[in-house]
Length: 325
Ligand SMILES: [Mn+2]
Image 1 (spheres, rainbow, N blue to C red):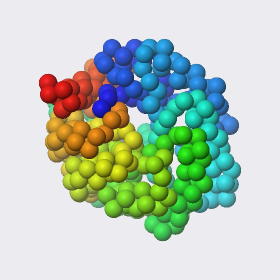
Image 2: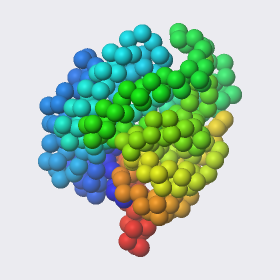
Image 3: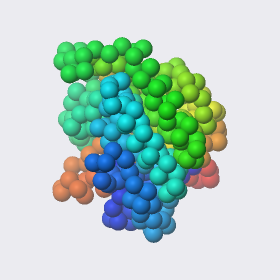
Image 4: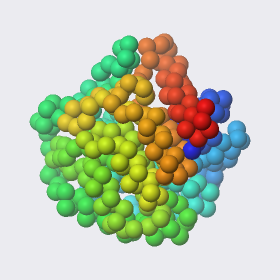
Protein backbone atom coordinates (compact mmCIF):
# COMPACT_ATOMS: atom_id res chain seq x y z
CA UNK A 1 0.00 0.00 0.00
CA UNK A 2 1.46 3.28 -1.11
CA UNK A 3 1.06 6.98 -0.51
CA UNK A 4 0.07 8.73 -3.72
CA UNK A 5 0.36 12.33 -4.82
CA UNK A 6 -2.72 14.05 -6.24
CA UNK A 7 -1.46 15.78 -9.38
CA UNK A 8 -4.77 15.62 -11.22
CA UNK A 9 -4.73 19.38 -11.72
CA UNK A 10 -1.45 19.11 -13.62
CA UNK A 11 2.00 17.65 -13.02
CA UNK A 12 4.39 20.43 -11.98
CA UNK A 13 7.90 20.20 -10.61
CA UNK A 14 6.89 22.13 -7.48
CA UNK A 15 4.11 19.63 -6.76
CA UNK A 16 6.34 16.63 -7.48
CA UNK A 17 8.99 17.89 -5.03
CA UNK A 18 6.25 18.42 -2.43
CA UNK A 19 5.01 14.84 -2.90
CA UNK A 20 8.46 13.27 -2.87
CA UNK A 21 9.35 15.14 0.32
CA UNK A 22 6.18 13.88 2.05
CA UNK A 23 7.03 10.29 1.14
CA UNK A 24 4.70 9.73 -1.82
CA UNK A 25 5.90 7.07 -4.25
CA UNK A 26 3.12 7.13 -6.84
CA UNK A 27 1.52 9.97 -8.77
CA UNK A 28 -2.04 10.26 -10.04
CA UNK A 29 -1.58 12.81 -12.78
CA UNK A 30 -3.84 14.83 -15.01
CA UNK A 31 -3.99 17.92 -17.10
CA UNK A 32 -2.01 16.43 -19.99
CA UNK A 33 -2.15 18.88 -22.89
CA UNK A 34 -3.28 19.65 -25.52
CA UNK A 35 -7.00 18.79 -25.42
CA UNK A 36 -8.21 20.05 -28.82
CA UNK A 37 -7.42 16.88 -30.75
CA UNK A 38 -9.65 14.70 -28.55
CA UNK A 39 -6.82 12.35 -27.57
CA UNK A 40 -3.37 12.46 -25.99
CA UNK A 41 -0.23 11.93 -27.99
CA UNK A 42 2.29 9.28 -27.06
CA UNK A 43 5.12 11.77 -26.67
CA UNK A 44 3.17 14.10 -24.34
CA UNK A 45 2.29 11.11 -22.15
CA UNK A 46 5.84 9.78 -22.16
CA UNK A 47 7.22 13.18 -21.18
CA UNK A 48 4.78 13.36 -18.26
CA UNK A 49 5.98 9.95 -17.09
CA UNK A 50 9.63 11.00 -17.46
CA UNK A 51 8.98 14.19 -15.49
CA UNK A 52 7.60 12.11 -12.59
CA UNK A 53 10.41 9.55 -12.72
CA UNK A 54 13.02 12.33 -12.69
CA UNK A 55 12.14 12.92 -9.01
CA UNK A 56 12.07 9.22 -8.18
CA UNK A 57 8.33 8.58 -8.27
CA UNK A 58 6.11 6.52 -10.55
CA UNK A 59 3.28 7.78 -12.75
CA UNK A 60 0.65 5.27 -11.66
CA UNK A 61 -2.41 6.74 -13.38
CA UNK A 62 -3.86 9.56 -15.39
CA UNK A 63 -7.22 10.56 -13.98
CA UNK A 64 -10.09 11.92 -16.00
CA UNK A 65 -10.50 12.47 -19.66
CA UNK A 66 -11.84 15.95 -20.48
CA UNK A 67 -15.65 15.91 -20.35
CA UNK A 68 -15.95 17.10 -23.95
CA UNK A 69 -14.08 13.95 -25.07
CA UNK A 70 -16.80 11.72 -23.60
CA UNK A 71 -20.07 13.68 -23.53
CA UNK A 72 -21.55 12.04 -26.62
CA UNK A 73 -20.58 8.59 -25.35
CA UNK A 74 -22.18 9.21 -21.96
CA UNK A 75 -25.38 10.63 -23.40
CA UNK A 76 -25.62 8.31 -26.41
CA UNK A 77 -25.43 11.13 -28.97
CA UNK A 78 -24.38 11.04 -32.63
CA UNK A 79 -20.61 11.27 -32.88
CA UNK A 80 -19.95 8.88 -30.01
CA UNK A 81 -18.08 6.40 -32.22
CA UNK A 82 -15.58 9.07 -33.18
CA UNK A 83 -15.07 9.87 -29.48
CA UNK A 84 -14.60 6.16 -28.75
CA UNK A 85 -11.95 5.87 -31.46
CA UNK A 86 -10.02 8.76 -29.93
CA UNK A 87 -10.26 7.40 -26.39
CA UNK A 88 -8.95 4.11 -27.76
CA UNK A 89 -6.04 6.02 -29.26
CA UNK A 90 -5.29 7.65 -25.89
CA UNK A 91 -5.30 4.25 -24.19
CA UNK A 92 -2.98 2.76 -26.81
CA UNK A 93 -0.65 5.73 -26.37
CA UNK A 94 -0.75 5.34 -22.57
CA UNK A 95 0.18 1.69 -22.89
CA UNK A 96 3.06 2.52 -25.22
CA UNK A 97 4.22 5.24 -22.83
CA UNK A 98 4.16 2.85 -19.86
CA UNK A 99 1.32 4.45 -17.89
CA UNK A 100 -0.64 1.54 -16.38
CA UNK A 101 -3.99 3.00 -15.26
CA UNK A 102 -6.62 5.39 -16.61
CA UNK A 103 -9.12 6.79 -14.10
CA UNK A 104 -12.39 7.96 -15.64
CA UNK A 105 -16.02 8.42 -14.72
CA UNK A 106 -19.43 8.01 -16.28
CA UNK A 107 -21.02 11.02 -14.61
CA UNK A 108 -23.20 12.85 -17.13
CA UNK A 109 -22.54 16.37 -15.86
CA UNK A 110 -19.53 18.45 -15.02
CA UNK A 111 -20.01 21.80 -13.28
CA UNK A 112 -17.59 24.70 -13.18
CA UNK A 113 -16.03 23.21 -10.03
CA UNK A 114 -15.81 19.60 -11.19
CA UNK A 115 -17.76 16.37 -11.46
CA UNK A 116 -18.88 16.21 -7.82
CA UNK A 117 -22.28 17.89 -7.79
CA UNK A 118 -22.62 20.00 -4.65
CA UNK A 119 -25.32 22.34 -3.34
CA UNK A 120 -22.85 24.40 -1.26
CA UNK A 121 -19.16 25.18 -1.50
CA UNK A 122 -19.24 27.07 1.80
CA UNK A 123 -19.91 24.45 4.45
CA UNK A 124 -17.50 24.18 7.35
CA UNK A 125 -15.40 21.36 8.70
CA UNK A 126 -13.58 21.55 12.04
CA UNK A 127 -12.45 25.05 12.98
CA UNK A 128 -14.23 26.62 10.03
CA UNK A 129 -12.16 25.00 7.28
CA UNK A 130 -14.06 25.31 4.02
CA UNK A 131 -15.68 22.20 2.49
CA UNK A 132 -18.55 21.40 0.16
CA UNK A 133 -21.86 19.76 0.99
CA UNK A 134 -24.89 18.21 -0.67
CA UNK A 135 -28.55 18.38 0.31
CA UNK A 136 -30.95 16.64 -2.04
CA UNK A 137 -33.84 18.79 -0.81
CA UNK A 138 -32.13 21.80 -2.37
CA UNK A 139 -31.39 19.91 -5.61
CA UNK A 140 -34.85 18.48 -6.32
CA UNK A 141 -35.85 21.54 -8.32
CA UNK A 142 -32.73 21.55 -10.53
CA UNK A 143 -33.81 22.43 -14.08
CA UNK A 144 -33.73 19.66 -16.67
CA UNK A 145 -30.66 20.09 -18.89
CA UNK A 146 -30.63 20.57 -22.66
CA UNK A 147 -30.36 16.77 -22.97
CA UNK A 148 -33.81 16.20 -21.51
CA UNK A 149 -34.64 13.26 -19.29
CA UNK A 150 -32.65 10.07 -19.75
CA UNK A 151 -33.56 6.79 -18.08
CA UNK A 152 -31.33 4.52 -16.02
CA UNK A 153 -31.66 1.82 -18.67
CA UNK A 154 -30.52 4.16 -21.44
CA UNK A 155 -27.53 5.26 -19.38
CA UNK A 156 -26.56 1.63 -18.65
CA UNK A 157 -26.87 0.87 -22.37
CA UNK A 158 -24.54 3.81 -23.12
CA UNK A 159 -22.10 2.55 -20.52
CA UNK A 160 -22.17 -0.98 -21.92
CA UNK A 161 -21.56 0.38 -25.43
CA UNK A 162 -18.52 2.25 -24.08
CA UNK A 163 -17.13 -0.79 -22.23
CA UNK A 164 -17.62 -3.15 -25.17
CA UNK A 165 -15.62 -0.82 -27.39
CA UNK A 166 -12.92 0.21 -24.93
CA UNK A 167 -12.20 -2.79 -22.69
CA UNK A 168 -10.64 -4.85 -25.52
CA UNK A 169 -8.43 -1.88 -26.41
CA UNK A 170 -7.35 -1.58 -22.77
CA UNK A 171 -6.55 -5.30 -22.62
CA UNK A 172 -4.51 -5.07 -25.80
CA UNK A 173 -2.64 -2.00 -24.54
CA UNK A 174 -2.00 -3.40 -21.06
CA UNK A 175 -3.83 -0.48 -19.45
CA UNK A 176 -6.36 -0.86 -16.64
CA UNK A 177 -9.36 1.46 -16.70
CA UNK A 178 -11.00 2.32 -13.37
CA UNK A 179 -14.28 4.14 -13.03
CA UNK A 180 -15.17 6.63 -10.28
CA UNK A 181 -18.59 6.10 -8.68
CA UNK A 182 -21.16 8.86 -9.21
CA UNK A 183 -20.75 11.65 -6.68
CA UNK A 184 -23.25 12.26 -5.15
CA UNK A 185 -24.55 8.69 -5.36
CA UNK A 186 -28.18 9.66 -5.94
CA UNK A 187 -30.31 9.73 -9.06
CA UNK A 188 -31.55 11.48 -11.09
CA UNK A 189 -30.17 15.01 -10.84
CA UNK A 190 -31.44 17.59 -13.30
CA UNK A 191 -33.09 14.80 -15.28
CA UNK A 192 -29.87 12.84 -15.77
CA UNK A 193 -29.30 9.41 -14.27
CA UNK A 194 -26.34 8.62 -12.05
CA UNK A 195 -25.93 4.90 -12.40
CA UNK A 196 -22.92 4.02 -10.21
CA UNK A 197 -24.54 4.81 -6.88
CA UNK A 198 -24.52 1.61 -4.77
CA UNK A 199 -22.45 -1.49 -4.11
CA UNK A 200 -24.86 -3.45 -6.35
CA UNK A 201 -24.39 -1.03 -9.26
CA UNK A 202 -20.60 -1.23 -8.94
CA UNK A 203 -20.90 -5.02 -9.06
CA UNK A 204 -23.09 -4.67 -12.16
CA UNK A 205 -20.30 -2.67 -13.81
CA UNK A 206 -17.78 -5.42 -13.01
CA UNK A 207 -20.05 -8.09 -14.48
CA UNK A 208 -21.24 -6.15 -17.54
CA UNK A 209 -18.03 -6.56 -19.55
CA UNK A 210 -15.82 -8.66 -17.29
CA UNK A 211 -12.08 -8.11 -17.60
CA UNK A 212 -9.13 -7.84 -15.26
CA UNK A 213 -8.43 -4.54 -17.05
CA UNK A 214 -11.76 -2.99 -16.05
CA UNK A 215 -12.44 -2.00 -12.46
CA UNK A 216 -12.98 0.81 -10.01
CA UNK A 217 -11.22 4.06 -9.16
CA UNK A 218 -12.36 3.58 -5.59
CA UNK A 219 -13.46 6.96 -4.24
CA UNK A 220 -13.92 6.00 -0.61
CA UNK A 221 -15.54 9.39 0.01
CA UNK A 222 -18.26 8.72 -2.53
CA UNK A 223 -18.73 5.17 -1.24
CA UNK A 224 -19.06 6.67 2.25
CA UNK A 225 -21.87 8.88 0.93
CA UNK A 226 -23.83 5.69 0.18
CA UNK A 227 -25.95 4.37 3.05
CA UNK A 228 -24.12 1.02 2.99
CA UNK A 229 -21.00 0.16 5.01
CA UNK A 230 -17.72 1.24 3.40
CA UNK A 231 -15.78 -1.72 4.76
CA UNK A 232 -18.19 -4.11 3.03
CA UNK A 233 -17.38 -2.51 -0.35
CA UNK A 234 -13.62 -2.67 0.28
CA UNK A 235 -13.88 -6.39 1.05
CA UNK A 236 -16.29 -7.15 -1.79
CA UNK A 237 -14.38 -5.38 -4.58
CA UNK A 238 -10.91 -5.81 -3.10
CA UNK A 239 -11.26 -9.58 -3.16
CA UNK A 240 -12.13 -9.39 -6.88
CA UNK A 241 -9.06 -7.20 -7.62
CA UNK A 242 -11.37 -4.43 -8.79
CA UNK A 243 -9.90 -1.64 -6.65
CA UNK A 244 -7.20 -0.02 -8.81
CA UNK A 245 -6.45 2.94 -6.53
CA UNK A 246 -8.16 4.86 -3.75
CA UNK A 247 -9.42 8.37 -3.07
CA UNK A 248 -8.99 8.24 0.70
CA UNK A 249 -11.33 10.80 2.23
CA UNK A 250 -14.09 11.00 4.81
CA UNK A 251 -17.57 12.57 4.95
CA UNK A 252 -20.26 13.20 7.51
CA UNK A 253 -23.68 11.81 6.62
CA UNK A 254 -24.95 9.86 3.62
CA UNK A 255 -27.34 10.69 0.79
CA UNK A 256 -29.70 12.50 0.73
CA UNK A 257 -27.61 14.89 2.85
CA UNK A 258 -23.90 14.94 3.67
CA UNK A 259 -20.91 17.20 3.97
CA UNK A 260 -17.22 16.76 3.48
CA UNK A 261 -14.88 16.72 6.49
CA UNK A 262 -11.29 16.40 7.54
CA UNK A 263 -10.02 12.86 7.11
CA UNK A 264 -10.27 12.29 10.89
CA UNK A 265 -13.69 13.74 11.68
CA UNK A 266 -16.27 12.09 9.38
CA UNK A 267 -18.48 9.09 10.13
CA UNK A 268 -16.05 6.51 8.69
CA UNK A 269 -13.42 4.86 10.90
CA UNK A 270 -10.41 5.36 8.60
CA UNK A 271 -8.19 3.04 10.63
CA UNK A 272 -10.72 0.25 10.14
CA UNK A 273 -10.90 0.86 6.37
CA UNK A 274 -7.09 0.91 6.04
CA UNK A 275 -6.97 -2.41 7.86
CA UNK A 276 -9.55 -3.79 5.41
CA UNK A 277 -7.45 -2.79 2.36
CA UNK A 278 -4.44 -4.47 3.95
CA UNK A 279 -6.29 -7.67 4.71
CA UNK A 280 -7.59 -8.11 1.15
CA UNK A 281 -4.06 -7.65 -0.20
CA UNK A 282 -4.56 -4.27 -1.86
CA UNK A 283 -1.24 -2.93 -3.12
CA UNK A 284 -2.11 0.33 -4.90
CA UNK A 285 -1.84 4.00 -4.00
CA UNK A 286 -4.05 6.19 -1.80
CA UNK A 287 -4.46 9.86 -2.65
CA UNK A 288 -6.24 12.61 -0.71
CA UNK A 289 -9.44 13.94 -2.30
CA UNK A 290 -11.51 17.09 -1.67
CA UNK A 291 -9.39 18.15 1.30
CA UNK A 292 -10.90 20.87 3.54
CA UNK A 293 -9.29 24.21 2.71
CA UNK A 294 -7.37 25.66 5.66
CA UNK A 295 -7.79 29.40 6.36
CA UNK A 296 -4.27 30.41 5.36
CA UNK A 297 -3.15 33.11 2.95
CA UNK A 298 -2.29 33.00 0.20
CA UNK A 299 -4.78 30.28 -0.83
CA UNK A 300 -2.09 28.59 -2.92
CA UNK A 301 -0.15 27.83 0.28
CA UNK A 302 -3.33 26.75 2.06
CA UNK A 303 -3.91 24.13 -0.63
CA UNK A 304 -0.48 22.61 -0.03
CA UNK A 305 -0.95 22.63 3.75
CA UNK A 306 -4.39 21.03 3.42
CA UNK A 307 -3.01 18.27 1.19
CA UNK A 308 -0.03 17.75 3.49
CA UNK A 309 -2.28 17.17 6.50
CA UNK A 310 -4.23 14.44 4.69
CA UNK A 311 -1.09 12.86 3.21
CA UNK A 312 0.64 12.68 6.60
CA UNK A 313 -2.46 11.07 8.05
CA UNK A 314 -2.64 8.52 5.23
CA UNK A 315 1.04 7.68 5.53
CA UNK A 316 0.74 7.19 9.27
CA UNK A 317 -2.20 4.80 8.78
CA UNK A 318 -0.36 2.84 6.07
CA UNK A 319 2.73 2.56 8.30
CA UNK A 320 0.68 1.52 11.31
CA UNK A 321 -1.27 -1.15 9.45
CA UNK A 322 1.59 -2.56 7.37
CA UNK A 323 4.52 -2.16 9.75
CA UNK A 324 2.75 -2.11 13.09
CA UNK A 325 4.04 1.34 13.96
MN1 LIG B 1 -13.20 11.05 -5.66
